[in-house]
Length: 116
Length: 116
DNA sequence: CCCATAGATTGACAATTGTCGATATAGGGG
DNA sequence: CCCCTATATCGACAATTGTCAATCTATGGG
Image 1 (cartoon, rainbow over the protein chains, first blue to last red):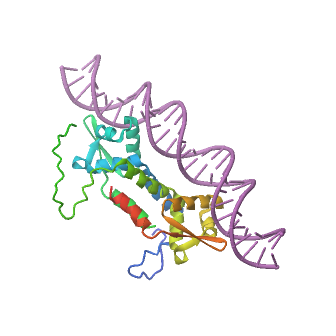
Image 2: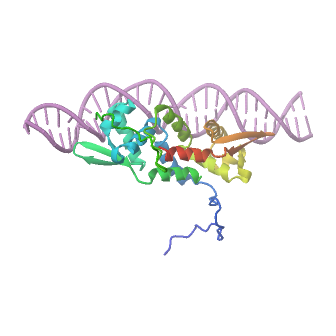
Image 3: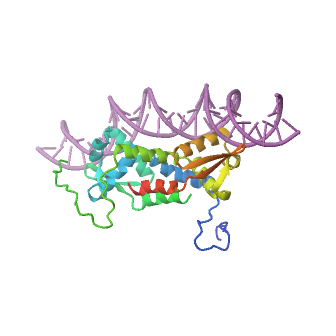
């Protein structure tokens, strides 16, 4: 049995309209807000920027603490938020933890804004 | 960590590089965070969506209160935040206040994410 | 083994945020 | 004028957030 096809927006899709999305529903809004909230802190934006610019697109925590002038626990906390938002991924090698951008995640986040 | 000065940003800009922006500085980060913070609340995202979808791209407060299931003062408060972030503009006509998207503002916000 | 180091987790705290009810302001209509 | 409706502002409150110091965990080297 098929999951009810409640999609059924106007059966005739004209070619290039702005998607005719009526209004963002509460669930999708909360979803987008969760991701955008992770991006709403200046230090987290800088973390993303540093990671992106890092050698091989990754950085370990020790290289992130100093440029932000924040304590190590605080940096770890911000990194966790970014990981949980699906923006960064963590890979542990030896004693070090390397963070890198999740491919396409920033593009997806920006699309959520454009798609409002 | 003591990477010598071998950095030497190639004076020759090849055509389509990712801008070679080294790292987001604190001031720009705070700037971007201010705007993204306005976008980090689900009810504000829905407000933007409703305004965008509204007749003539605008809506008055009375049309925004009901679909969000929020009190009128709360909606006014969110609208103010969106205006101060440069995302919405307000025009008063008679007793009503009409809100509309600032042209290009959403695109600019999304570019801040992509440009990290 | 024991220790040193990288990083995560915890607990605390001040600051900020989202929400509401009450009140203020401002037009428009009798 | 006075009232009615639409919106903004204010004061309060609980919830969330960003930060730090202290502690825990894990990995690697002697």
